[in-house]
Length: 193
Image (cartoon, rainbow, N blue to C red; front, side):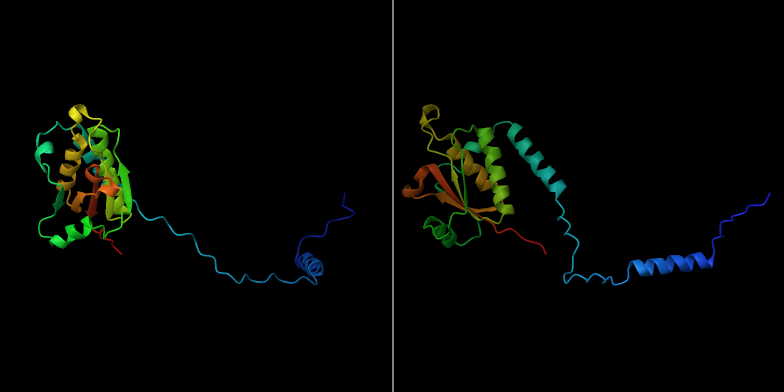
C-alpha cells in the first residue's frame, strides 16, 4: 500500500523556510556593541628560586646541629663594632651616629643559641629580599643568663662578622638599648632585570 500523506523530503526548500523564519524572529534586533576595554590575560607569577630556598634551609639546619665551636665565642671578642675590611671608616661612623634609619628589627629575648641563630639567619635573609639594609638586633645584656654573662651578645657578633652580606655593626646608643642592641648595616641586594 502506498503512503497517502508523504512527508516532504528535506531539501533546499525547507532550508529557505528555516532562514526566513530566523530572519523574521530576529527582525529589529540590534547587534551588541564591542566593549571599550581590552582584557589582558593575568600575569604569570614570577618563578620561585626553589633550589636556593632548599640550599638556605639546609645551611640553617646544618649550622644548628653542628658541634659548638669555641671560635663562636672568640671570633669577635668584646669588640663593640665591626667594619668589613676594605670599607671606609665613615660607613661605621655614620652607622654609629644614626644616619641610617632602622628599617626592621628582631628581638632575641628568651631564645636559646640554636633558636637565636636560626632567627637571625632568617631575619637577615628576609631583610635582604625586601631590600632593608639597616637593621636592629636586640640580643639583650645577659641579665637572665647564668653568671649574668651575655651569651647571645657574643654569639650574634660572631655570626654577623662571618656573613658576607654584613658590612658593619655597632652597639646602639644608650637611648636605643646600648650594649643589648646591635645596629647592623647590610650590603645592597643585587636586583636582576
